[in-house]
Image (tube, rainbow, N blue to C red; front, side, top):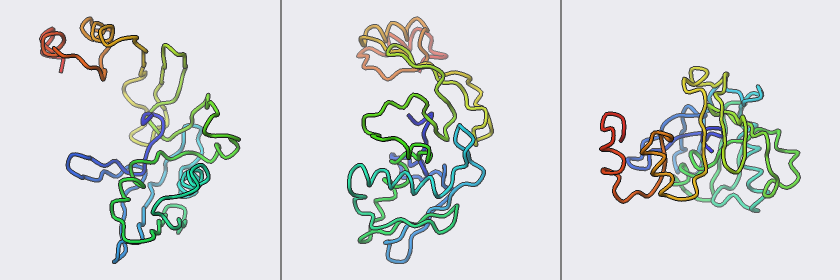
Length: 202
């Protein structure tokens, strides 16, 4: 999902490092009840529509509509087109992870979606490095977004996700080089995969 939709921040859960993404930075007020996020300029969604504070408010308001709550968030304000404030019911610095990296920002084009929980989105629109080229139950093909905000079009032109029916079939595909990356349980990964080509297989 992160190749199409993106969060405001990336947070390294191993060491807590906060990496600017759709937001370039953030700050807390003195008692940690107000979080201000500073949004990146010159970012567009894959359909050319600008990303700004309205996109952030729309995304969180849609969540509130769906789940009838924001959790610890009391209110959200657009300070200006590139600055958003989250007001909390009590001091809550842990919510930076939820607000910053756990919510993917949507374009306002989704506001006409009658039932976002069940509706199938055939043309996903995000700020990410890839856009959907084709979809089937067996294969998803993503193609590089030529207007991606991070240095333009990604060098890898296509990402293909293939559905394998078992771990053994996927492991065999890794062994034979049909697949370059996977998340799979392989009990003898060193023997089955790494040793086949130690220079490239990791």
